[in-house]
Amino acid sequence: MTEVPDLSVTIGRMKLKNPVMVASGTFGFGEEYQDFLDLNQLGAILPKGISLRPVAGNPPPRIFETEGGMLNAIGLQNPGVDLFIKEKLPFLRTLDTCLIVNFFGNSEKEYVELAERLDRVPGISGLEMNVSCPNMSRGGIVFCTDPRMTYELVRDVRRATTLTLVVKLSPNVTDITAMARSAEDAGADAVSLVNTFRAMAINIHSRKPELGNVFGGLSGPAIKPIALRMVWEVSQAIKIPVIGMGGIAKAEDAVEFVLAGASAVQVGTANLVHPATGIEVVHGIRKYLIQYRMDRFQALIGLSKKTLPRQI
Image 1: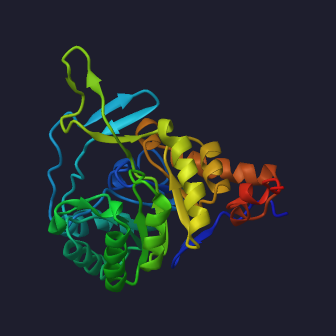
Image 2: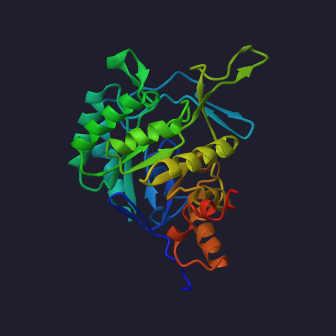
Image 3: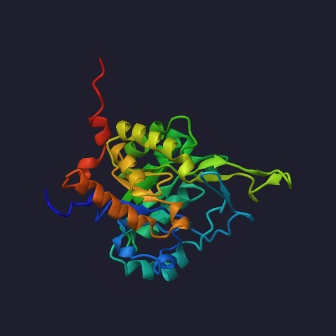
């Protein structure tokens, strides 16, 4: 065994130095975190989700801490693709790590136009599609809740870009494996899961919802067991890589997701509590591999399935 295990992993056309990413929406545009950790030690950075035009977001309050997690209703606030390319991308290009741009739209046309725009911009390693958005051209049905709609959207975006394409799946569906298969069949290089769970909280004194938008997305340690189960299911249903997320706050959490079948992980809400969590997860995975005398991170992927007892 080598003294330093190989942590690299390949996702589509991207080769990551290690499997640890920071999730979109929890890490700003990267520059905000540069004083707290060495960004180059991360496997990939996913900045805030980008839309075709600027989005103001939801009315406050937008964030509420709950038991074991956090509710957020930011409303996908972002400066739009033009300002992102002009003002945010120059810093991200200076980093020695992969850059995966998360993007979203309100119609198939917007998704395709964004993919075409970003495909032509140097310095971007891959794209992550947030399909948890309403399709305003089809009566507001959320893309990720309809397998056929997901297939058509991913197919059209796939035709618009040569970059590695990751589809970010929502857990707010009856069968997440059906959505994952639709994304794979349409040409996705990988899927990432899970996005936040639709939830709410009420202040018993004011008797009003804690969030200005009433509903928000639940993230953090509270959702980890459910997210882990979904990663396990999806990794058995498709052949493309799965990127796991949902409540990862330490290396042991990340290892669980990898054992369940994830080829890489994203650290999200934990970044808001402890900015260096991603780096600590990288170091923790390395120590785990050394402890169990494993040369390569990729040997760990889905290993729990291989050690299950045979059914009689």
